[in-house]
Length: 348
Image (cartoon, rainbow, N blue to C red; front, side, top):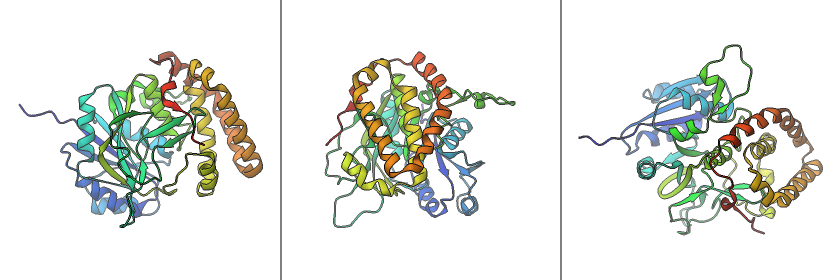
């Protein structure tokens, strides 16, 4: 009897990123895994991305979409594919041949794993130095700041253990479709022509982009799914904001200027929407003072240094009623009462 090889749907979401596509898609074509499809969700690109792929990669299925952000593109990819496993990847990524083969073997070994990542390294390395880590999963602090674990540090063998993590980075995220289906949310949006896919979504469309990978990870954990890091799978990321160390408050302030105003505004809004939706009463009680202190410091900083970011506060308030409805759904269906084990103290 032939061995069952689960179908993998690889979703590449792109918006005017023609310069990355050849290398990314060529890398995906050379994967060792035998049963996969590549689908490109093009978010209204104007730079010739679609034409390039049509000419050079005819086997890639292209879905033209409005620019609905990372969340809208991910939802489109989810509902337009059928793979048992689904990978959402950025076009500025490349892969070792066995990347997905290695990860899917781990997924097949444990049906409670909902999301998994390998070791993601900085794509451009200095030949005379150790590789630099981009992410080995998401690390969450008690004040609810979440960072890419290991980002910006040399890979010296300190992340060689397969382990459960808070979540996986959205740059290269591999999910079990059943787990994503399990955390679907009602959209709570009015529509004259409601289809099943317009009534429900996996990625929160109110986010557009940024923090959506943290939100997905948090919701998976609340439903009892595991997020796992596997060091044996290697991929590479040409991160647009550079690979920066941003663990301590000092490092955050030092590198804040590298973040675009657009990203700052969306991140501020989405961080708060995410916490409104996902915080359990027990976790709030355990960390309330440190969360409040962080909010005071953050608000004070943007008032004094980044007043243009204040518009995000009003956008947060406008989206709050829907977030509260989503919270009711998430809290009603969660399987665990506390995420305390994932929240660590922030380094000084």
